[in-house]
Length: 337
Image (cartoon, rainbow, N blue to C red; front, side, top):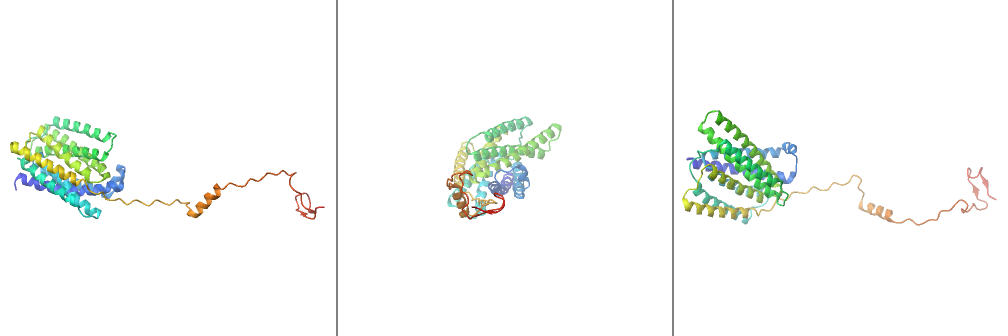
């Protein structure tokens, strides 16, 4: 198997792992809501999704060793294609006709994108200065997206997650190619170590941002992640790594047609019904009383008491003649009269 075929196989396996992790993350985000980091770390389901993401990242890093960014990153959209049936099965429903149409359009668009994108194994890598510059610019954009007070925060966090994942992929390719080339020396070791730390930072940031984005559902945020990721990675590859599309003008036309078809497929796939989250029944108050008793109590409280005139001792009527007077009232017991 040549380098391109190996990159394709590894990318497909990575997409399946990422899709399984995305479905698990979406379910966890919808059921747990806004939880602290300590609560998530104590949740076994979160560790399961994190393990799937880590496995997908390893496969993705291996694919980047044998294929350029312009080839490997567009295949990440297959994560959305695989996540649709997985999410539907988890929700206990069937995949709709619209979702199947979106799947076919996305696959066709990716096929058109892969024709001009296939190229030789990567050789150029980012220098330490380029890696730091890209990291600083991406961090600034992520902060701008996540701190802005606007609607659709899920899509903004999804965009930020896609950017973080794209930069992590570009930096991963730099580390993989540098290690495979066997470049020795203190400068190379320093660069590999620094870039490796940046990879960990952006990979974790992408994971946490996607967890936040999936609170409103899986379809639209995952689609935005899979659009922002290859676009940002392709920009880095073409501007800094010298990657180019093959085929000249024909390759450009195929890429445009493939991008349009893939975008149409992604938009169709975003129309996915969200899985309902069962609402917890409200807990009864400890001192709750039956409705009838409560109504009677309210009525008794709200009913005004009749006005009774206050009488002074002089106005009070005395005992009738022949009525015994109680002892202790006016001395010893006696009979009036």
